[in-house]
Amino acid sequence: MMREGIHDLSKGLNYYLAANNPLDLYRELWSSLKLIDQLVIKEVILRGIPVYHKDTYALIEKKLGVDKITRGIVQASMNRMRDQGILNNEGHGQWALESSEFKDYVLTELK
Picture 1 (cartoon, rainbow, N blue to C red):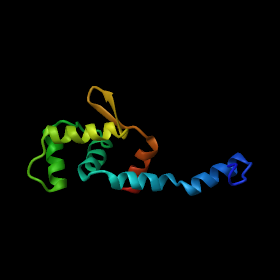
Picture 2 (cartoon, rainbow, N blue to C red; picture 1 turned 90 degrees about the vertical axis):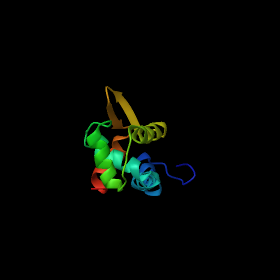
Picture 3 (cartoon, helix red, strand yellow; picture 1 turned 120 degrees about the vertical axis):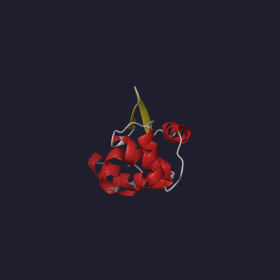
Picture 4 (cartoon, rainbow, N blue to C red; picture 1 turned 45 degrees about the vertical axis):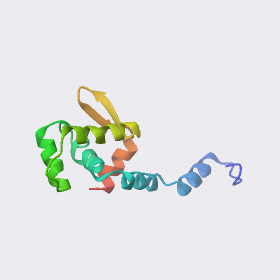
């Protein structure tokens, strides 16, 4: 704000948001994810279906167009996104997106 000569906090926030649009950041994050990671988020995490279940593997196989998805492949996806700070393990097999804003982006922008 000092560099731009902005002394009003509200104007400063608007200036920052115009220069650093969160939607652009979420778009960039989404496009950086592997397709399996995107499917795990959209089809599993946000729908609340069991992560490690044969029906979940079948769904991912169908969406990816591959013959075999294993627990290890899904686990690698979950670990990768947890390590990136995208997913949070809430215990008892429950996973959630770390950022509610990113969740909203996925739900609204990527229907």
